[in-house]
Each structure stands twice: as structure tokens, then as C-alpha cells.
Amino acid sequence: MAPPERSWASDAAVPDGDTAGTQLDGTGSVRFLGVDAPEKSFEQPVGGAQGLDGAPWDLFLTNPFAPGLPASALEPPLVEHLTGRGGVGAAANHHRHAVAAGDALKNLIQSDIAELGQSPDQFQFFLAFSYEVFDGFGRFLAFVNRNQPNATVPGPRPASYNERTLAIGRTLPYFIWPNVNPFREAPTAYAAGTCLRGYNRN
Image (cartoon, rainbow, N blue to C red; front, side, top):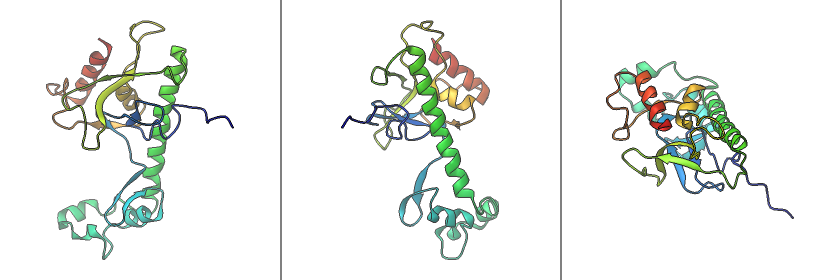
């Protein structure tokens, strides 16, 4: 039996919209700096990690302030602010956007592979680090692009995946100190994005 085809379109290689493995099997994960994508699964207040397309999150986000749930212990002003922001289908909607973000990143990577004329095994990322190299989960923290040593061959080097996922609306800006270089002096989010474009194209 032939082994399964190795592909950057797999969930192992690209688990979500802001994380990818540096290898096709998903090892050497890199968490993209400056952006955040919706989660496919998340830690439940009770019961550990659960998929957002499952019943526990559906129940929780339908009414997180139901009697007996941990969220009911929050301070009243926060409860008032959050009341009505959930509801039936909130968890499934979040999961739908998470899957779309992951698929969008996979499509960007697959498109780069095709443009570079490479096989999945030949394709490599270029990582630009900021301040911290790893996060608490052992993932690299970086601005990520396709590895294209010549800025104009086979075509102009594109913006980083961080910026491209922002441009198509599949991630949101997400800056955590101290990993904000070269943006910390930028007066606006737009100016920070302009810094990112220059940072990844020089």
C-alpha cells in the first residue's frame, strides 16, 4: 500500500489559521506573531479541551451565565457586558470561522508552492523572530513567509502569511508584549501593518 500523499493542506501541517508546522507532519510548530485566528477547540471551564463544534461549547456559549456554570461567578459589570453576546449557534459559528481561517492559510501555502514550482517536501518557510523565540507551548513565535531568497524570482516576494491572512479577513491583529518589534512605535494599527510589509520585504 502506498503511503498517504504528504501535503501542506493537512490539519497536521496547518492546524489552524495562525499556526503551522515547520515540517509536513506538523512538528516544529510556529505561532504567527501579530495575528490571531478563531480556535477550533478550546479548554472548557470544566472538562478540558473540547471542539467548538461539540455539545459542551454549544451549551456553554448559548448561556454561559446559567446557574451552576463557572462564568456565573464573574463580577456583575462583566456579566452585564457579556450577556446577550452568546446564544444558540455561537459555538458552531466560531468553529466555522476557525475552519475557514485554517483553510485560507492552507490555500495560501499551496498557492506559494505552485508559484515556486516546488513539491510539498521542497517547500520551506522563512521565519523572522521578534523578541521571544518560543511560547509557553514550545512553539516558535515568528513572522512567517515562504522561503524565497530572490525577492523578484519567480515573482515579487509576497507579504508574510501574517499580513496576508489579515488582508483576507481570516485573522485579527494580536500584539503581545514584548513581541511587538518593529511595531511598538507605530501610532496606529494601519501604520503597524505598513511596518510589517517593509519588515518582510527588505
